[in-house]
Length: 161
Image (cartoon, rainbow, N blue to C red):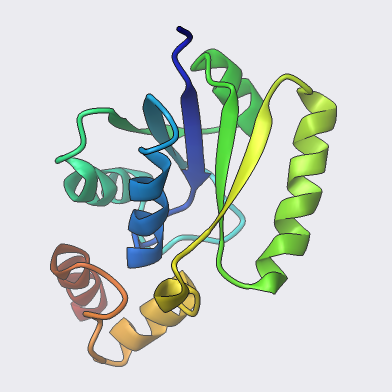
């Protein structure tokens, strides 16, 4: 029986409860999940790639079939290098779909053998956005509904400096 390897790419700046929901649910569908933390991004992340990898590794250490790595370059090339056949993308709200749909079609053009699977996050996480979380942290707000305590500590440390 073939092993099904999926890649869940993103900036994970920071890791949210919504990300963790997608990860947990992906583990039911795939034998191995590789969380691919994007090194270079137009989003200008708050945390550097090493910090983001460390944060998410801490959050998923209980899962034996999850790997966390950073990557740079074209996602399709990375997915092929990892011998994966699926890209997992999380959707929160309808506005996410248009961008993700365009990206999936582009990836399909580049690599018709690699599928993109969209997963809707649980409704109680649909409003969570990394941008809003960083703003709440910067202003000293309560983060427990959005991130784990470990991630909240990292955010507070980042904004203290």
